[in-house]
Picture 1 (tube, one colour):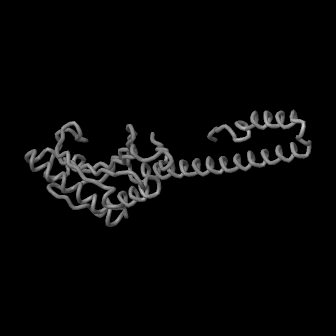
Picture 2 (spheres, rainbow, N blue to C red):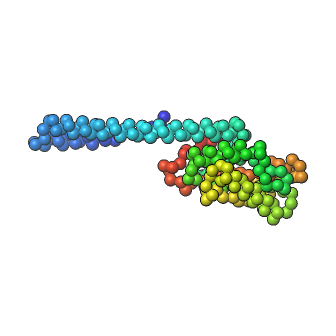
Picture 3 (cartoon, helix red, strand yellow):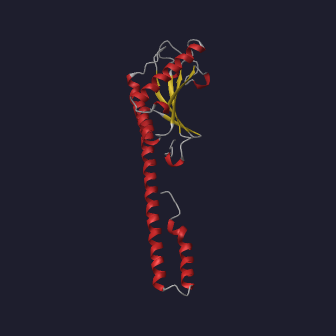
Length: 217
């Protein structure tokens, strides 16, 4: 349970001071003092109930986010990396050699990812990063990586319901430092792990009250 100072604790000293002030005044009657204390007490209790409701709601959303992220890990073998203001999802969305079409088997994980963004990060920006294996020239691979990122971006918008200005696409091509299996390439399935996309949620610019607390391994 998250611990927050209650309204009654914060206002308790003020109520005591007010009672002493009223009692010390020659014109203040006991009934008036009691009425004022009762009013303050009710205001403090109302504030405590409202704060408790907000804390319970936040804890419920964090718990739901934990379950959804765990489902992504268990069902789709997704790994989640937490960076400063970012969540990077390494998803098993791969591509055939020299192709940028999304395979039907990879669409369910994109659907689930889009649902997580809409539910917990509706104001965040999503970046689709496209990659290739090292076969082909650097220029060609940058274009192919961009085509793959664009294809996933369009899917997240048209099928996942994300907003066009919420999703951007970039290419890293054959970037050696980002290859899952260094040097592995096609034709064939040898370079399949490198022919992929990565999905990054950037919530760093989202106001604190609109963020869900990211929970990762």
